[in-house]
Structure formats: C-alpha cells, structure tokens
Image 1 (cartoon, rainbow, N blue to C red):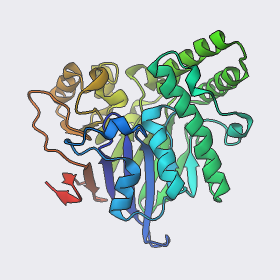
Image 2 (cartoon, one colour):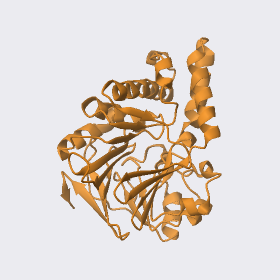
Image 3 (cartoon, rainbow, N blue to C red):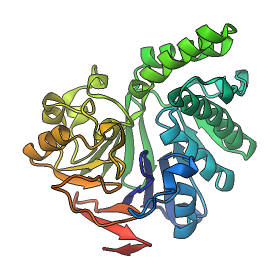
Image 4 (cartoon, one colour):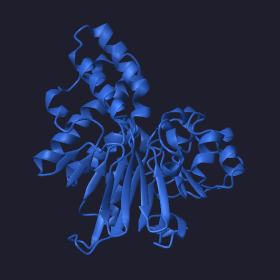
Length: 330
C-alpha cells in the first residue's frame, strides 16, 4: 500500500493506493482532504508545491473510489472540490447528514469582514458543491460514525474514532442555525464561532494495514481526543493535527499514540506558527522520526524540495518513506 502526502503548501491532501483486484484498475484509490484551491498558495513553487488536481493528473489517477472531507476548512476541502470536478468520487465521507447540503444555499463571500471569514465562506460553498457533484455523478455520500469499522480493500480497514455522535449533532445544529440566520451581524458572529470550533469536529481515522496502524486526525487539536480509548489511538504513523501548531499535540497525547513516525503538514513559510519548534522537539524527544509534506524553514531541518512524501507500507508493518520530486525519489 502507498500513502502519499501531497505538497499542497499550507493544507493537507493524502492519496491512498491499495492493491485490489476487484477494482477496474486493480487498485483502490482514496483521497483524504485536498488542500487549498487558492492560486496564491501555489505561486511559490520552489519547495515543490502542487495543486492536488494537477498531482492526480500527473500521476495518471483516473478514478477516486473514496474521497474523505475531514472537516470544512478551505485548506482541506476546496482542493477536493477541484479534484471532484474531473474525478467525482464513488463515495464521499464527511461529517454532516448526507442530505443536509440540499437544504443549504450558496453564501455571499463578499460579506466577509476578514480573510478567515472569506476562507470559511468559500469552504462552506465548496462543501455544497462537492456533495452535489458526488450525487449528480452517481456517487454516494456517507457520514461515518465513531465506532464504525469499515473494510476498504484487502488487508486495509478504517476505524472511525471521531467525531462522537453528540459532536455530530452539535455540528449539524450549529450549521443549520448559521444558514437560518438573517441578521448580517449575528450571521458573521455565528460564522466565526463555527469556524473556530471546526477543527475539533474533524473525522479522526485510524487505518490498519496488516501490522501497520496509521492515525489521521484532520485538524484535531490536543483537546479533541477525549473519549477515545488509548488502545484505539496507538499508531505507528501519526499525522500530527493542526499542521504541527503548538495546540496539535502534547506529551500526554504522544504518550497515548506512541508513534515511530510523524508527518507534519506545515507550509514552507510556517504560516500561523505551523511546525512549531516546541511541538517538533516534543515529538523527537519521544523517539519519532519526523517527515514533512512541505519544507518548513527551520534551521535544524534540511528537507529537499519535493512534490510529495510517500510511505510504502507492507502488511508486515514495515514502512519506507521517500520524498518525491516530479515522480522521482530524492
């Protein structure tokens, strides 16, 4: 199996490819988040940044069996929508009731009073478009529940660890309340409040492939793992939450996960204090090898420009990591 962290700058896009003879191409293909769709994110390309739809085309990916939108933020969902315009998924996982998008309307992005509100409004509009694209092309929308164990392909199983049912219900309630609000000032207040809470509504997935366990928590902060048992969190490979910002993990969480390898999806310019030095030191002190989807500028790091970071994972649990530039190992 291959798990590829595409260099989308500040954002996340993870391509999963698992051999499956029952699929038309002989491969099960999943895309977990899609990075940003803002052209400015890719204007700086010296570190290897590439939009997810361009990377998929370059790799010759012709089918997406599963798309996963971990949560509705611009740097995770908007690149998914771009990819879905060419490759609509057979199945879309997201965190709201599957039919909810039909009750929602496109929002006026020009109403935003700051960049954060603008990004979130675009993310919400892309959520509606992504759901509509999926169903209009014959795909299925699902909202996996915490506790679900879902076989994906031979040897690969997804364990859904979060959000809990109560959080899913709260997310739906707050989303409906936002779209029902007609007072412009109150609408923007509710918009910012939901934006601030969205990270901890992320889907948290643990992928088990043979002897390997991979923990993918979206943008969940260190406070968002309450109610998940230690044995569920334990993983060999951990994609640290919230781009390695200081709230992404603490020692108590790392002691529960006990990863041997950690991937940090921080941009090369370390925007918003991503790839925070204290967070990285914490991870290294616990014995984890550090890898990066982009090339964060820190004195102790010497990461070559690359389009992607790929882990080749065997069913024995053995993992090999490589940085890729234009499809070539470096």
